[in-house]
Length: 474
Image (cartoon, rainbow, N blue to C red; front, top):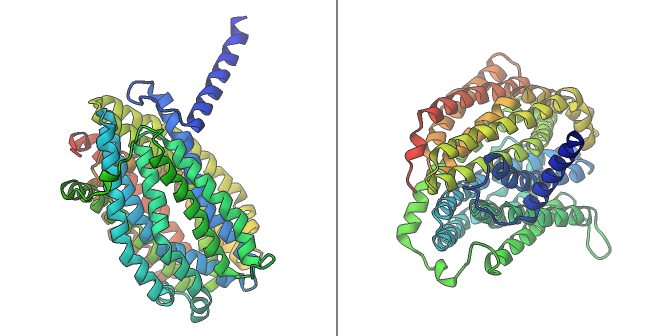
């Protein structure tokens, strides 16, 4: 009798926890069990990141069926590579926001957490203004620098202008979600991405192919739809910041610049931004190397594989963000051992998730690639890329969690130094050597990626065990 009741009880408990995670009920994450805390944070964070990756996949799907699809796919992919610099700004600021907000929430000081979040928004708006203007003025040049052909650059300039001009929306989407994650309310962050993606999925075919009085904008329509969709997601975030129903209570006085606090946030955010700029510049170099050694088809195949890879890696990143929040809040509450235990428990979940993804790509990579392009040459390169990249997924997942743990503690310099060595000192020269010197072309670039990630994870683990992050003050 007891044997039949117990499984039902466990199943009921899991679905109750799942419902709580999606609904977003606020709980003290520093006092409940670690596994329960991870699940409450990880489920909405993974769904949030899955939704973020859907943006690129939706654009890729619709433009992949346009005339001259290889040019369109290359434009979307190269633009995403350029936008990674903006993502770096957004992610660096959101990491700082998560670290500071989580620490203040752990200290049971939600007022200070709210103010810190708003000061980070002030920084984001100011810094992004210059980037948006530069993107509008030099869109074509950016594509050419990335290795695009003159035809591709001409074809994709309007797309780049819209995406770069609306980049403040990207930054705010990441940043405000980082604020909510730090507060432990990952469900709001998740729902903002749901809204943004549903709008994008509906608007993409309308603006790309046209409907009624709306003309067919082609590739440019994908940029219009994505920008509007993200804008709706940001509107939802702002509503939840000001409705007074959450732990964060926003006052207009919090938007008055507090220069001491701004300097403190920048001190955390600057290496965080640099951390991702380093990684982004490496990805940009790799994209350019593939474009110059593999041509338009090689570039389109590589960009297709990256979009597919990120669709599965971003949820793992969401899982790692759970570790960042738990580290920050537990350090704020003085539970140092619990912070460390949270990281290793999160790693176990990441290994299982990415192990399944690796098997999927190794066995079904060609099916995934064929869904997004009808070009056989593009499909072949995308499949080869997926099979090689997936070999490093498990250890990459471990590295993501460890890196997030450093960032959640406010120790953003440690992963920045790791990235400099891994990506600039090792990966870029190694990829160049394989692609050009040994004439392996795009395949050489693909091989360099999982090899570099192995080095990153080993370095991160050694430094994490040394424990300097436990003493970081934010």
